[in-house]
Image 1 (cartoon, helix red, strand yellow):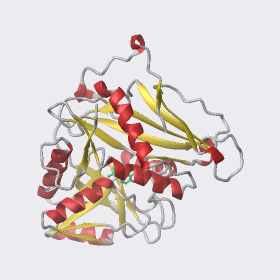
Image 2 (image 1 turned 135 degrees about the horizontal axis):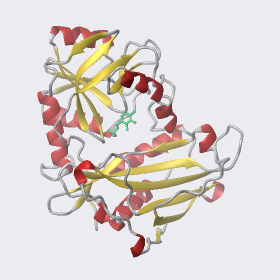
Image 3 (image 1 turned 90 degrees about the vertical axis):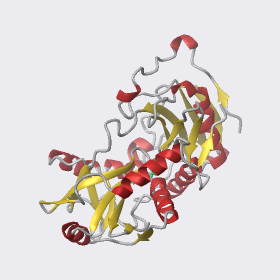
Length: 358
Ligand SMILES: *Cc1c(COP(=O)(O)O)cnc(C)c1O
């Protein structure tokens, strides 16, 4: 499929943020976006890059009523030599298709998704920030657009990609987060759409997240929806525990989003000779081992922050410190290693990075 390009008038181009360090995540977008429409039997058509701007959507568009919508999140990194690279982008495109399948939405060729992302970034390449740690955040999205009231899968969809520059996550150094273990609300249940990056999962997580914030916590630790004992995830990130000299993370059993950073952490740790167990872990075990000192580190993983160390957790009104409450050795090592691969400062032994032809 050809991607047509309609550029923004040079006179209308937006000023790029002058201060890369103070970019607020998710607020600034580049001059262009990619769109492609799905029309029933005719499939995907009219792939185009156009000036960034509001979408025209019928008020009866099914995404607005029944939430048939999915998204992805990845980044483009500018290296010291000026080149722009992506990190495991094919994984995001394949995951989008798995999410699509789960939500009864049409899949979209991985090669078209990749071309869309790469062509869009090539056009807006000047928006990719320069300072180490900063990046261009990429948000592929698919929504149900058919105007129809009545619950069934939509016959029409739109896939689009928007991008925006984001600051280094840890501009002021690694900051361990405080997390709140919620026993009342769950993110999803096994059998639910927890392993799909679908909009509904985030809408339903807001209430508990706000309660945790009111109590002074940054994130919610989600327990499994059936027994409310087993740890699933933290906020919108996957979770790792260093118990003794073993790395433990909950297995992908349907209620956990299969993070690409999670997979990268597992592969890198194993490559370094660390024993990694994907096994279920109860909150009681976490609290007990935090108390005994066996739980040396706890950290979350995700594209936005890469690694987010957890300094303390609150469970049933009791606060447990993790390790010394600071940044653990393994968290720091894995963070440095992944960031190093993304910015080309470390050897990419797994072939994870992909250079943009711009
Ligand atoms: C996106 C996401 C993650 C992290 O996935 P990455 O591919 O590592 O960015 C983890 N959990 C949830 C719920 C997510 O939405």
